[in-house]
Length: 106
Image (cartoon, rainbow, N blue to C red; front, side):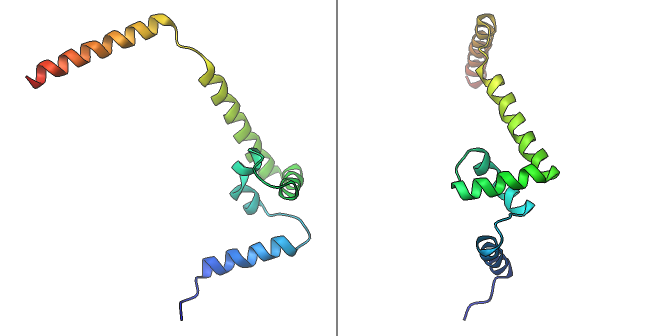
């Protein structure tokens, strides 16, 4: 017989309660699934439960807003193109480093 894993049992019991309960979710459940929720990777029932919880829970609402804000900042930052003068400077510095490292090895 195998030993009972309390964490596994707790998670299973929580999952059963969440599926058979009154449809509400907990902060822990929402935060554990925040990325999937924001990426729309959950079924409609789960999304509706999480959306309802986030609308009424300041902590989860703030967490979702912070993640969405961070994602927007990253999208804006990653879409900018470096100036050509910077590219030339970086390429020339890489060439200098390559030549220097070849000379040091010899």
